[in-house]
Picture (cartoon, rainbow, N blue to C red):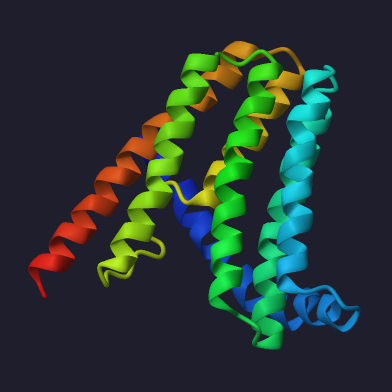
Length: 204
């Protein structure tokens, strides 16, 4: 099981690298020409995240995976537009990070409305937020943190998407197990990033 997860993570890492190289030259360039800015794409993705728990509250559970996909897509697109137009800004990075954290919370809330265990969801969300904090704090200390750890946001969104699919079909046990996996991988990632920071500071 551990080897399978590791292979999936490696595959996702290669896919992320491919996407980061191709999208700015294609979709990013096209969307910039029609007037969409990186911050605009970020906010559109954030709106999709806001919609998810609202519709889930009214038991429109089928919309949860759709909103996760759309929001995740815009999260990729904003970076693609920024790289295509050389409009990467510090505020843009701040806005992207801020909306990502709130979006994570909204997606877990949507899953809770769909019947996922709230206590387990809170634990998984907590570890997910600390994963992001560990990267931010590590980079403030001058340590390169990109790609460190099993569970970056793209992997987390994929697992949330899968959990939401099972929730839609009322397979809540499997959905809860996936949320548990998010929590476990989050804890492992926190350890990996902490070790990276410790080694990096010791080598300075």
